[in-house]
Length: 286
Image 1 (cartoon, helix red, strand yellow):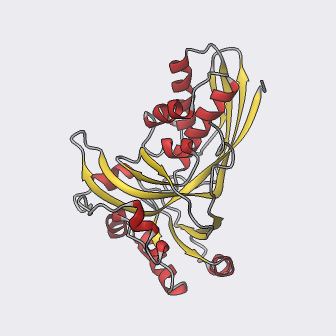
Image 2 (cartoon, rainbow, N blue to C red; image 1 turned 135 degrees about the vertical axis):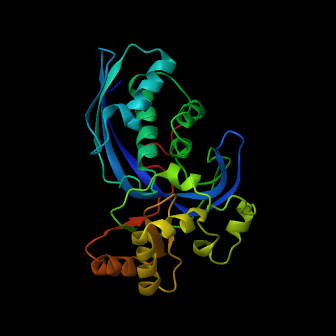
């Protein structure tokens, strides 16, 4: 078995995000479509014999103790009782606090990678249960396919999505998911929908909405400005926020996406991403 593995950890966008209720433990119930995209973090993991979990480099301003890649490694080490350790290098390309799921994707990739390197023999469903202990989005990235999600995001139904180009604006702003979901202005009773409702919608890219968006744009002017800019520049599209923000995106053809990137105001970062049908590293794994 190899002593080192290199993994791409893709981002996601939420094509819609409806908050349908709240559990007694405080977690919110939701419905969403998770779309994988080809904007990826890069993770290299080296197996060691000393039992230590070492992060060689990672996200700026995130301590090793708080980094989900380290937490993921310690979790699978504890659950499997392996005596092995690892060294983790993380190259961040996905913005933090942007609603693109970068941290969750990184954690999922570490769980999968160490399962391979350490030969711990966990099945995908076992890894998904572990991932839920780290965050509600982690099981999706371990599923490795686009999905309709319910519950807190862990009830997943794989779904085939058409290929699409997605233009993303990151307004250089980190938004706390916890802060958004604590807001008294958050819609918590959105009527439920079905997969069929989405599949049969004449314009899937304009289906539903993001219930977190109203809360975020009221507090963060940069997000509201980014959405308004997209409305003006791509009026036939349906710009919206991903996750709990701060990134906003719209589905357009590739030529228009490239044009938008050239015109983007200097205070923002832009990405032209392609939708993926499966995780680039392990979409076909069992």
